[in-house]
Image 1 (cartoon, rainbow over the protein chains, first blue to last red):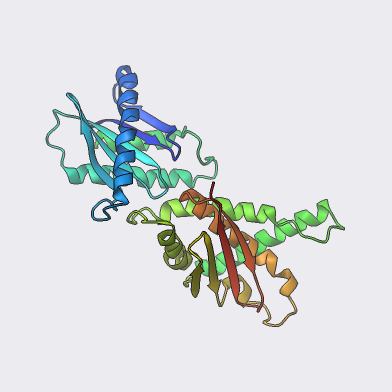
Image 2: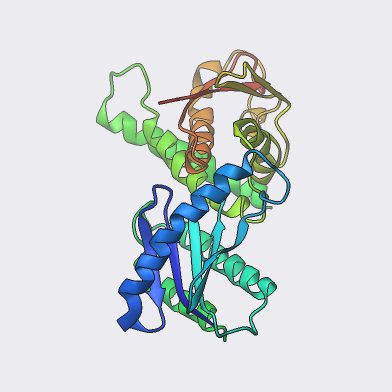
Length: 138
Length: 158
């Protein structure tokens, strides 16, 4: 399924990052952070044409040789990014959408945790576990 | 059922904060309700994350205000705001003709001076939810006739 997932805060600071293979983490971070520009572009053009851009799911941001990068931005300007292996063609758009939904839903639960300070990076272990669960698609 | 619990919990929170203040400074006439406001802020900040989860993206600020007046208010107070007014320059006035925390009190002037205690939490909720949506604002409340309450929202532009 997905190889990497990241959550970026309102001010584009990383809140949470995980990937299946820890050795590739740096490369993924680079890819995720460079996709933020694409997100910004998509959000700003959304103001002009209201048509389909009002959905939280932004679709594919861009594709590289080996990976495809998908984005989702919540109403509270939290960015969710998922990286998928290009060789994985069995994954449909709808499945990615539902992955983002689940991710957003556990994020909202985490924000409601009284021990979580808003705008801080997420260190909760149970959160980490559920994200890994979602991206590995079990 | 959860309505009643919410009301009891709220009045206990108010009592807790007010009593805490009384111990600290006995002779101060102006009550310090900033703690109560801050509790509201955290609640608003967290609750909006959940409530907007399935929503389409907001077009603009007015769209957010409409959301606060309808869905948001219904989720918390089981009714909608009765009147929303704006000057389109960052000032919004939300009027609730039967504000939940005030409807249980006498309609006369008797408890009017205690009303600020019961609206501070809500001011915080509004401020917190808008802050999480990316709108920094000042929220004040005005109570003239008992169950009715007006919330003034002033958006801070930088």
